[in-house]
Image (cartoon, rainbow, N blue to C red):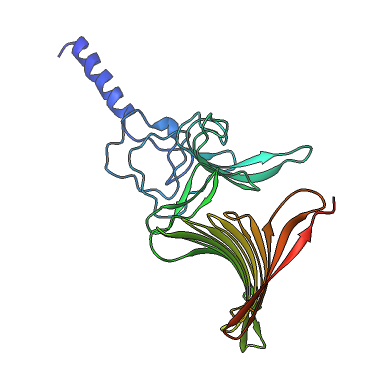
Amino acid sequence: MGIGQRLTDLEQLVQSLASRPQRSPLGPGVMSSNKFKSKWVTANMINVSELDAVSTNTGDLSVTGNLTMTNAGAIRSAADVTYANNTGYYLAVVSEGTPTPTDKAKFRVGTATGAATPQYLAFDGTNIEFRGTMKFGSAGLDKIDSNGLHLEMTDAVAKKIDFTRTDFTPSSEISGFVSTSFSEVKLRSTYTDYGSTSRHSSVNVLGTSSDSSVYIVSQNGTTYYNNLEVLSGTSNTSLTFTTNGTTRLKIEQDGTTSRTTIGTANLKFTNIGGQATAGTINKYMKVEIQDGATTTTYAIPLYNLT
């Protein structure tokens, strides 16, 4: 064997020895990063108690324990995503404030906070911010957006907003109902007197295809009191006071005949148009008095004094 071949074999031996694991000056069970070469480990798994790496490029990552990072780190969808900038997701602890900075946990998912059409959910360390449409309900038809709260009526059941206290009896609610024939909005309060008698009061706004009305009702159990009703129909408007379902006083404006009636079931006053010349009869006051099944009508002339 010539000297040249021997030199070649020696060089290959040196390279082979250099590529093998070397004893670490750090002690047993510890390997220094400068002792590894690129693609040197080809095993399916590295089983270590601690792994310190500046940068790791991996595919699927499965963590069975805690994933802990310092405040300098962040979980985000891309390197250029921060709390306020670019579309993606971001979770980190940010140190803010002067002269003494404080740590704040921040989170955002969605568009940038300053986007032309912002759509995101975020927590800035103090407040929860939401931009876009929040849908809820079994069908996702109920929603909250920039126009307000929208409750979709899909069946014959009113939807409501409750105001309650778990440690007290009274409650209040705002409810709404929409059907093919009418719509209604109700403001209602409930009070239970000594745990036995339920007392209610409500304000109803009811609209149909032909009229609309406002009701103010006080209810004790199944009995209604002090009803105030303002009804606006196709030809008249009325203000009605009822007790226990009986009309006590009604003020009605009839737009068809331009007359106003004030009265009850037993006594009515109705003004009827007449001449408009000063010193002459301007209008008649029609008085109806009902006694049982008999109704007596009187006409009282009214003079124009101006």
